[in-house]
Image 1 (cartoon, helix red, strand yellow):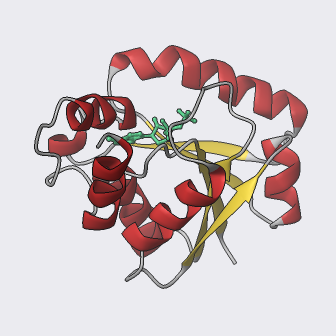
Image 2 (cartoon, protein in one colour):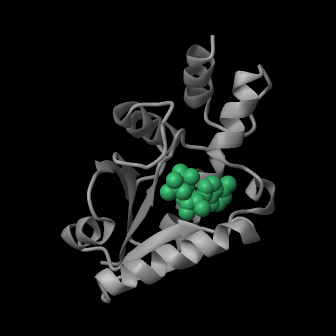
Length: 159
Ligand code: ADP
């Protein structure tokens, strides 16, 4: 089985994240684990369980995926899941430096796991969780960018 982990903060899960999971799960991998990071350096708006729940809701129609929370080293977690690939998204040039650093470090930690990068459909190339939060906080329409459950959760947070 060809298994990938797709790690991230997913605060919250967006249609850009979903676009990547769809590409990966339908064309490339037999199974994709969406790994929601608990101990992120970032201060999150949503708790770990909320982030997991919203990712699950956003991906409900995709069969060969599973959403799980994790803490600790990603390469160790990937190994436990028998995943040979870490999947990440590359949107714009500014993503590159950080992603390059992370993948080099992960390779040093475990040389058996490869990082693979996918680009989203053009319409999501500008989309990020932080931008969605900003728009939601200002009362803007985010329905094109997130699942209805995520939108409702954001509206509740910023009410
Ligand atoms: P992190 O804090 O680990 O960067 P994110 O939830 O922001 O977590 O992103 C998880 C992964 O999804 C990253 O690889 C990021 O580049 C990718 N990603 C985020 N938004 C998009 C998008 N609109 N299109 C494609 N990839 C994306």
